[in-house]
Length: 202
Image (cartoon, rainbow, N blue to C red):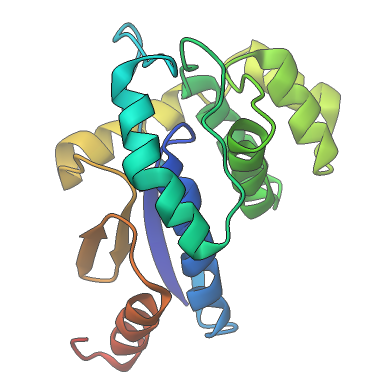
């Protein structure tokens, strides 16, 4: 089984837009490839997060995000949550979800909650509600967040991304020996996966 590592942040719109092509590419290889969503905080605490009313996000969304989303047929809005939430706790929740067989569903729900429903995914109560929506045990998930049961595993994954792999932007997709950053077309992803499965270069 080929494991494709995807380093992303839940407040990165390009990561949400990358989800569809990546999932579609992997689905072309049933039983041969799977996705492991990995955490990457663009702005870890105490670095200030961005404000949607600021010039940077307004310009980036109007010139880049919205045109890309329209081309891909993805519904997306610049969330009004200001400042944008920190995502460390959401990533800790992702590890709980993955351990309980719901990693893929959780990842998707974080994106849709933030970029389609404008919910504050930095708030524990919001995360608990979203986890329950996808079938995770509410009380167990809440306890995991409250007790920070996944704090250290999450920190290790983040250090691995920052220090070992040198990831500097998201999404970064690692397919075997190759890593690509940014929004990658489905066809290219399929070629990379096929080449890795065949032991050849794409």
